[in-house]
Length: 382
Image 1 (tube, rainbow, N blue to C red):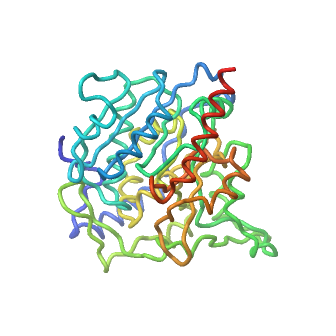
Image 2: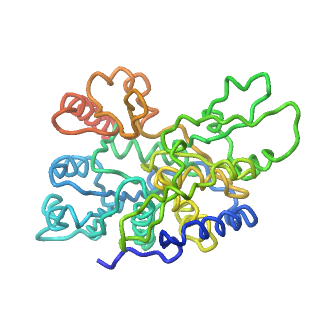
C-alpha cells in the first residue's frame, strides 16, 4: 500500500501553533462549504436500496467473529470493503477467513492499510480513503464497522429500516454546547439535537453569537474525556506517530464563543452517500486540518461536520449502536453480554448494531441474537 499522507493535514510539531492559528481563522471566517443537495427522498423501495460496509480490522483473534458477521450481512446486492491494518494483520488471512483465497467476489474487497492508532487524524484518513474507494460503486448508505460489532437484526430488516429513512444519517451526535432558556439551563440535553426534521446545524449555531437575554449557551458535555484534554496534536499520516504538544492548546473555547459548533460521536456510523461525498469534497481542507489537530479527531469528525454544514437538508436518526460505557472517565466501551440484554430487548428496533462483543464473553448474547435474526429471516421468506 502507499504511505498514508494527506498534505492538507500534514502538520509538523514545530509548525503546529501556526497551522492551528491559520486553520482556526479560516474556518471561522469562511465556514464550511454549502450543502450541495436539495431534499433527499424520505422513503425508497427496499429492493432498490444498496449498502456498503466498510470494516476496519487489526487483530487475527477477531477473525472468527468477522466471518460470523460477514455471514449475517452478506448479500450480492451490497458492497464490502475490509481495510486491514497491515502492521498487525496479514490481509491474506482475512481473505482466507472470508473464503476469498481461491475465488474472489466482485462486491467484496480486502485492502491493506497503514497502521493508525485510535483517536488521531490518521485513523480518519484511513476511513476517508476507504470511502473514496467505495465511491466507485453504487450504494445509498455506508456502514462503518469495527471487528467487534455485531448486527441486532437481519440485513433485510436493516435494508427495510434504512429505506424508510433514506435522508437520515445514523450518527450519535453529542454537541458540546446547546442553547437553553436561562431558567432551563440545568436540563440541557444533547438529545434535543435528534428529532424528525432536517437539521441545519450551522444556522442554529449562528444564534450562539446573537444577543438574547432569554437564552444562554450551556456547555453540555464538558465532562467528556477529550474536551478536558487541551493539548493539540501534530500528525502527518504514516510519516511519524502523532504527537501531543503540551504548549499548544486546541482552541475549544475560542470556537465555542465564535459560534463554531463542536460535537463528538462514535466513529462507528451509518451515513448517506451524499454525506460521504461531502466529506470527500474540496473546500474542507482547513476544517480537516483543524479537526486533525484535536486529540480525538476520529470522535469529533462526523459530529462537528454535520453541526456546521450550511443548509444541511438531511436528518440525524436516533437509531444506531448499543454501546455500554463503564463507570468513571474511561473512554473505551465495555464488552456487552447477557446482563445488557434487557436494555437491548426493550428497544431492539432502536439498535442496528451492538459493540463491543467477543465470541467468548458475549457468547450467550450472540446466540440470542442469532436466534432472533434467524426468526426474522424466516418471517421475511414466508
